[in-house]
Image 1 (tube, rainbow, N blue to C red):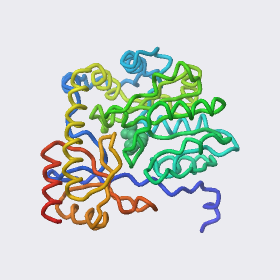
Image 2: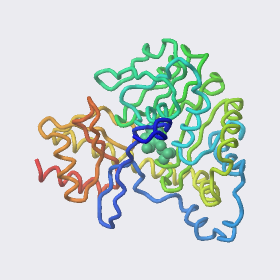
Image 3: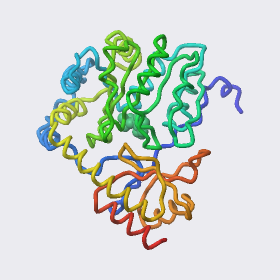
Image 4: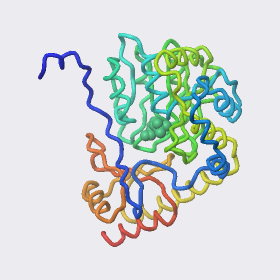
Length: 350
Ligand code: PMP
């Protein structure tokens, strides 16, 4: 090791799912939405004046923040917008988790959390989920430096009701509690309704899943204006122009189309129900899925073997090697046709 390397902050990086550059594939590995963004986004793309690219975007992200606030029926000063929820959450780790006491998040949850904690030098502890991949709420009643958990959880797709979220909040009024709701629109109930009662609650959502815009990188947090101001202060001290001209323009159109949003979600949830039945009939077991993916294990066939066999056929699903989950596949809900191809493969293979 070179002498200058010793002061470098080293991290084991997060490993994102593959993004193969193929025209013909069934892509069920990164929880994208199989349907296109709302029609208004298409119009906005076609009408976008490329000359606007010569100007800096609005550093306050004002119009997009306002559109998101209107959608959630909150004030604009209760919303912070960032480059995907990854950016929003990373900014929160940096800003809100500044204690000697460990922050808490479940052992089995979004693997980026430990990466950020390590990168920013934040101590953390990870209470284990129970045998059914549920959060044990009492594990979050001890002293800590802050709490974050996804609801529904990733990669398990398990949803905890608001009663559990509120119990955790009740016991943690003195630290920031972040609920990462990347997948909440697929049947869950958002904790946004609790923000007026808990001034230490931050709820994070994203355009990447339910709004079919993973490629645009838009995420946001909703909560107490005081916390939003702290986040904006950190953002402006770091990189003022986070959102680009196109993500602002297209993001506004996407959040306005409530009908398309509801229709798309209904289609994905119907496909999920059907896929659940067919997979159960094939001998798969899975916790009740409440996100746009199923976290499944098979009684006879090892997950790794299935993952590799599927990949040979250009059907991409996600396989994790971490303890306890290394015999599971995380399968995104695609279109009905895509799920037919997946189920067809399993029927032939088994
Ligand atoms: N939180 C969870 C739980 C996720 O699974 C993801 C998607 N990988 C994200 C946040 C980040 O999503 P994005 O940055 O695309 O908004």
